[in-house]
Structure formats: C-alpha cells, structure tokens
Image (cartoon, rainbow, N blue to C red; front, side, top):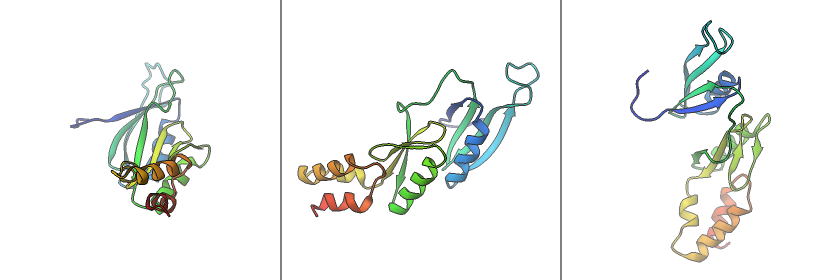
Amino acid sequence: MTTDGFITCLWFDGQAEEAAEFYVSVFKNSSIHGVTRWPESGPGEAGSVLTVDFTANGQRFVALNGGPQFTFNEAISFQIHCADQQEIDHYWTKLTENGGEPGPCGWLKDRYGVSWQVVYDRLPVLISDPDPEKAARATKAMMAMGKLDVATLEKAYAGE
C-alpha cells in the first residue's frame, strides 16, 4: 500500500479486527480495506489477525494486534469536531457504550482505552473570545461538564 501523508497505527492486544469493525460502524466515510494474518512462521498464532487496514471518518488507520506490552493513554487523543448537540450525543453515546468511560470537558475513553475529545465546533471561539468575561464564562461552563452541552455553553458565553 502506498500513500501520501500519515496513517495512524493503533496497538491492540488481540482486538484489532473487532476495534476496526466498531470504528467503521461509528463513523461516516469509513470502511475496512484489508486484513493481514500471521504466517506459519509466527511469532503470532498462524492465521490469526495481525493487522487491519481501515478508514474511519476519512482518516486512514492500521489496527495492529501487537500484544499486551503497550496500552493506550490520554497522552494521545482523537478530536471529533461536531456541529451540534445531535452529533455530540451520537459520538458520546457510541464511544462510551459497552465499557467506554466518560471523562471531563468532552473527553472520553472508548471500550478499547482509546481517548477521544468530542468537541463542539464553536468551542475554540467561545473560550478564546477577545472579551475576557465571555471567554471566562464559557470556559467555566465547559470545565464543569463531562459531555459537552451546546445550549449551556452558548448561554454561559452570552451571559444568560
């Protein structure tokens, strides 16, 4: 496979195919491109999944069954920019179901431990407004939230 740009590799401990199928089901513009399997020469079990090449939301990924040596943490996260509350609710619900964990300020971990930021598109504008009072109100509202609430953010920003 050749490509211009980057492909993100996600390291799993046996769940690469399951995870790729999950991400493809959550995001638009997604598909699985191919699965490679361990050969007889190993070191993994012959015929078991080694990698899954897939696209999620137009971004290329490879899911690798690398073993238990490495796990995901919050040092790396994926941002999902959402136009409205409906999109936020969709991604928040899908990514936290079946063992995902909600976090603060729009952050969450999915069932595989991958960190996501489910972000309202206007949030950077709200919290960096040149009017320090508007920015402070929006920031304070965001800091009190788990899943972002668009109406509450906009009301705080407006001083309502």
